[in-house]
Image (cartoon, rainbow, N blue to C red; front, side):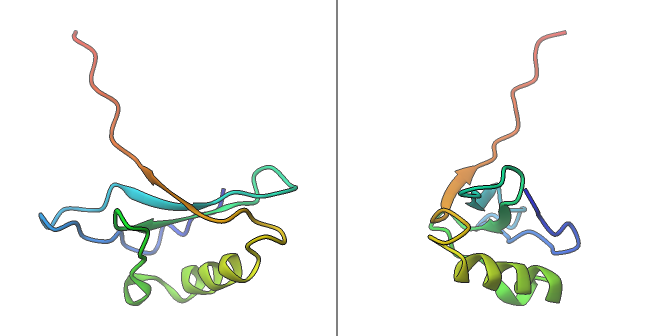
Length: 84
């Protein structure tokens, strides 16, 4: 999956980084999908993205149903710490 690490994550209502990702999975070639930080409804903040990330987002939207599956929102909660 491609993700642009130079683009900052969206802020949650509490002011922290978003833990949600909008994921475009590839239809044919494994590993050629896209992931973007988003809110729980799947909205991305285009103004917070780098130019490269915005271009990738627009490409992913244009290729839905052709090269990429329709996106889904995933909650990326950190794994719980195991007791020491």
